[in-house]
View 1 (spheres, rainbow, N blue to C red):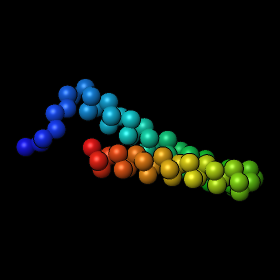
View 2 (tube, one colour; view 1 turned 90 degrees about the vertical axis):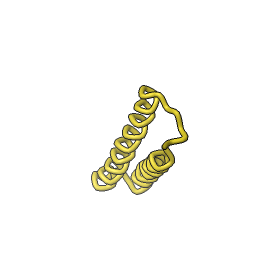
View 3 (cartoon, rainbow, N blue to C red; view 1 turned 45 degrees about the vertical axis):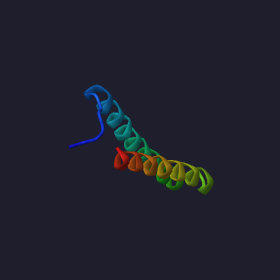
View 4 (cartoon, rainbow, N blue to C red; view 1 turned 180 degrees about the vertical axis):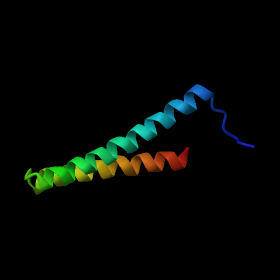
Length: 66
């Protein structure tokens, strides 16, 4: 039996935030790779990829913790 008491609306809301974080993280990684191949330069691509990876990591950690 779970020791946590979560109302159905609250739990769903946080799950939606985590899924949105995953989608945004993948989007930023893809945009970083696309920017690199489109000639945007390695600095812009690196910023986008690192930002996307940071969002992905935080979203995954929050999913595991909840």
